[in-house]
Image (cartoon, rainbow over all chains, first blue to last red; front, side, top):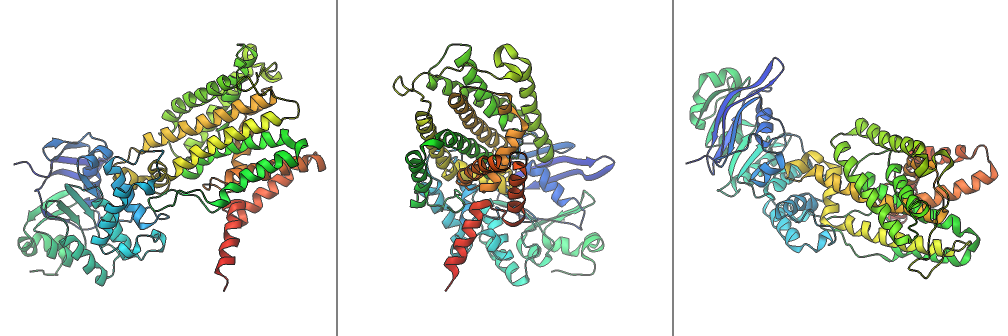
Length: 250
Length: 325
């Protein structure tokens, strides 16, 4: 059975610097998978290659059995690959609902329409509001992103990605910079995401990773160091050495 | 007349205040009959500025070469009228629009692959190249002497262009009304909202699967089409085309008008040319050698103290008034 997302021998070099080295990776359908590693391990580069923001130097990327290595970013999104960003990439001067509606309209194919007012597309509005309600943001729908607390902005990041109805969702540090109380809220949201979506989360918050993920891949200097279920990763001495230090998770 | 932005929660209905420019334009027709030529010029520049606002204010495409499309429209209408014997104003205007569109899509497809300073320089290069072509192709364009002998038949065979500029004024007003209606409709549409998305964060627009490049090419082409129409109008009302329509100064002047009025507000394109052209008219009469100083001072003051332009000042004042207990 084909995986939701798979890479084979994925490499990326910038001159003499290799940031991804022969990465074989498999994300199963409906998986809850985490990608961890110290700073500079190449995690975001890996995600950028998966989404098409960065072309790999060599190797293949396969989405649902289809080779998407040379496919444009927009087409990958249409095939069901969604992502969030480590640093908020929102439409800051637009209202929360418009941030989500842009994604919903794009997916529904109405974004190119010119002669009917956007606000008359009741279906787009309704779906966007539903999504916001699911994430507990309904009351903030009319607020501009600029005026929204940071923790909620992180949730809008996720809402935009969900507006694309992805089969595979790549979450690049969804709790980055969020106070622990709000990071609990993000974990709650992640727990309630539809089970059919395969999720790859990149995160430094180990509590969140070990509570969320069913499988963990550890990336070090662009190479996969080890992969396995959380309990194995927590016990792995190499992981402790390069990443976790003396911290212990069970 | 706050900033007009589309969006899925924006009310697209026309507000009463939006009828103000049209009331003023009609009132000016009756109250200021001796200024109708200047009035027609202002209306044309409003249309031209509206086309620029679409790309600069809404899509975030910076340009110093919008005069390429305006100038091409002007020359196409002029060449048809003076050289090809086609005097029907509707045909001339349609040809000016088509020429603007064609140049818009062909140049846009190339230059919109670039950004920032490179894009700015390329837009400048396009209008400079066209200016040089118009300068050299004297048999068609009249070169530095300009293109005269422009013949414009009565509109729809009924309304002759008169020496007082009445027909020209009303004709320009109608074309502007149509242009405004189209631009406004577009801004409030999903397409317009997606343009705002590109301006705000093109990285994210890519990530939600938007064909960012093609959207920009499309809006650039539409903007060039409107600029072409404005160019056609200037030829028909002046019955002459000079090289200045293609100059960098013309493009820069337009940008100054838009900044004065307020970028990304639709009506900034109305206020800017009115303020600029009236100030120019007044200053050129009072201080023939130093009138640019006055315009420059206006621009410096707006850039330093009122980034939203004249409409931004009005907006800010209204907000302050409303927030008073």
